Length: 183
Image (tube, rainbow, N blue to C red; front, side, top):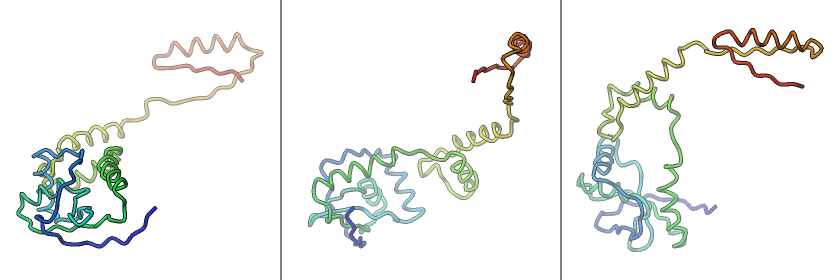
């Protein structure tokens, strides 16, 4: 692992240049959501740049959102400690790694529910109602009593016929499932 101290530099938008081979796609709707987030919370996520041309490695969506908002300078960190190949790989990793995870739905849903009256999540591209209704479903499921109880019985094989007859009688009870193992 390369360890370098990152410093935030404020660079004018016109002095930043886009990387030519960025595979990340930002829709106009997503750019608007990013802009709304910046307006609501501030520009809290510096861009990653490299070289004398200030090539943007990550943060292209934030730049487009900043343009919409008329922001003239952006916080940036330099990743010049990475060679060109590492920078290209970092661009892919940065954009792809967040796609590999999901949410702890119970925690997410509780947070959305707690904040629903004070934050406009719709403007950030989060359809809150979808998650809130899912929360109701989860709560309903958690409140249901357990549907199955497991019992373990051990029988002496010397009374096999009686055990088979008893198991057949138990199988007749609605909702009972029998699993047998022999040791």
